[in-house]
Image (cartoon, rainbow, N blue to C red; front, side):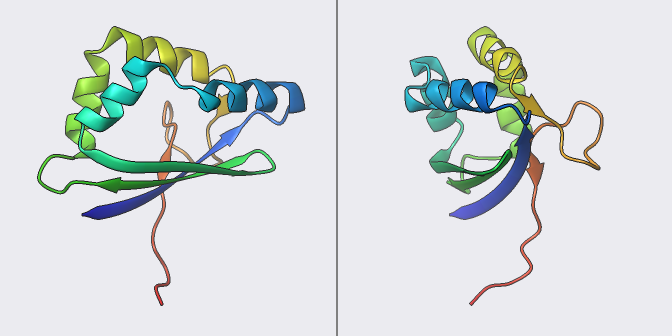
Length: 110
């Protein structure tokens, strides 16, 4: 099992943030299926102000970011979800053009 942590910002608008959270109370079944079928075994998203933090646990034998990206690009429902979510999201300062979730570097472990 591997664990990845990623960050992303939401647009700093309380109404948009509330809408974004509402979508995540019951994600579309196709999105849940795409997450599970890619080898992600656990996924949590936390928010502080407009900053999001995602923890992803994965099955090493199945998951890779490249595979997930290829699967997502070929799935029209995932593309529809991503387009919708971009209404609420904004890139982190320093993110590459078009980059959403940015992989965080682990700097401490107890």
